Image (cartoon, rainbow, N blue to C red; front, side, top):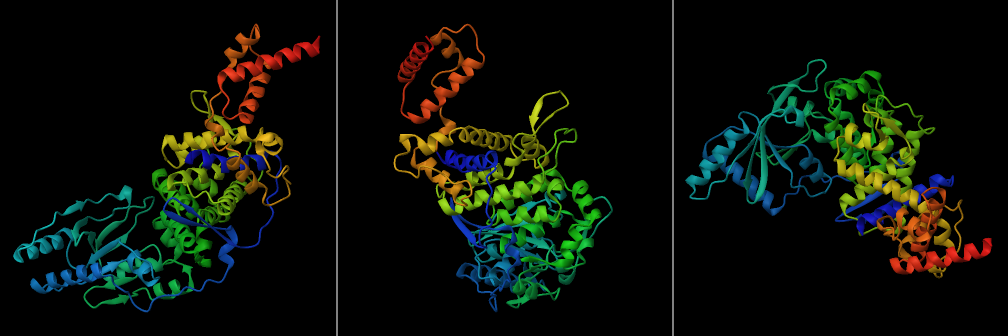
Length: 514
């Protein structure tokens, strides 16, 4: 049922595409819809032009559990007379200053490895007669953006990550840095964005802005890099997508110098060659699953990264629709408006995500290519599975939703004129910017939200047998279309009832012909 509702929304976009429907420019606004447990705010692509006024808290307000955790860590330092400075790094500090809750506590150590400090915590617990905790060590894994060993342990039922402060240098043609122990300032400057470079010093209970820009950029609602953006992006091109994702998530403006660096041909080339498809796909998935998918993907298109991110097959010969990348964003935006107005609150996060992917790639639904074995493959499938390295079942579901949209476009007349529609509005004005939303409402109110899951009561062989035809062909195709429409007008109809109708119509046609 939930996937069917997603397909219903996507099929309205297919209707728009096949009828030259024009999406009117709506007033600048924000649309919200509950999708599973997450509330998504679908903001139009140009929303970043608004002046952002970000209200920050003057200090970090700790929860009761956080107070207990930090106090325990300070007691460990005192017990062993350790000079170690403990700093909570990155997103937790940012979110706390924004007044948001965060359970992602990453603690940076200035003079020891994370596992060494975890051993000290357990030694302290043992001396105090308390139960020690297991320590998990996550080894360095550059392919997964884990450049240093990280230790994890539970303290007061919260997982805490411990890692040492570091500085890094990069070599050409690789986004994997050479890491070494560093100072807090070096660590802050190696971060991807200034708003993620803040520390909360547990020893002193204060926020540290060692780049001098973290708090000011957070207040101004600006996405910027601690170091020159082109150097930052050439060192690790994945940071281009992270900048776009965080800008969309918080509705912050991308710094002008940052945008200039993003469109630089060297940076685009580095993104295409130095980053694995898995890492790109992960970032895109976070954008689509996030609270501002339209804004994020719109920025990718505006910054000329669309085909860098959504790579087309190399042997594609088919011609793409004109302004295809812009059409993809507009399709995504249109679906977001449908979701905001109609409110598909029963969609889970994953179903909503697939629905949005379906809308994004809708303009490409009829574009195919031949693989090395000569098999015809939908380009959409290639993008999802090869370019983004998402699951095969994700690609299959997106294609199924596109097929459902094609099915729906042939049923518009039934939806707006058949008696089954009851007292619904009898017609749809193609110039009405609520047209797509109205189609969604009709689809649900008439009980047609499961249209693409409907099984055919009669197949081609049944038609040939019942009507005494010699073979398949155009006549069988026409009858299959008539049967499909009969099923939509008779949702609870049985196979026997369909057969009875088939013979009645056939008899009338023969009588008329004679």
